[in-house]
Image 1 (cartoon, helix red, strand yellow):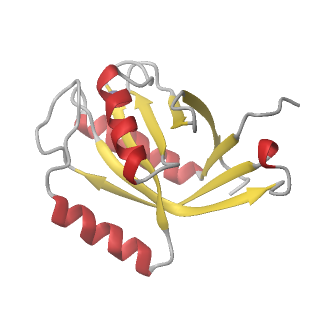
Image 2: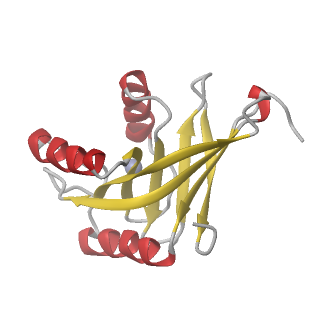
Length: 160
Ligand SMILES: [Zn+2]
């Protein structure tokens, strides 16, 4: 096993997966946006280099992009975002992932990379979940402590 690498996994159910795909299809060819709430647990905490982080999705909130576009998404309605965020927190969940879709593939764009850096400064350890309408892939990414974008495994189904 490799050391010095943190491992991350996002777990979603089949129906949560369908929900994410529907959100993406609805916005197509523009980008969709959503927030994923849930819980994070750790395994193998005694060895920091091999700690395994498990993000379990409990709730998905869809948001309409403030300015529909095929190359970015915008959440300008801060009040709505905080209302949904507070609701989720009252239910015992925290923000674990920012979701959006692309018309084609599911990899972070240059704009995404900038967003990831900016958001990580105030809210670290957020997974970026991206769905590609063209490739039909659902990928997860996270900024590691050295600010490199690292792939996160997305586990769909039974394990949740
Ligand atoms: Zn993007």
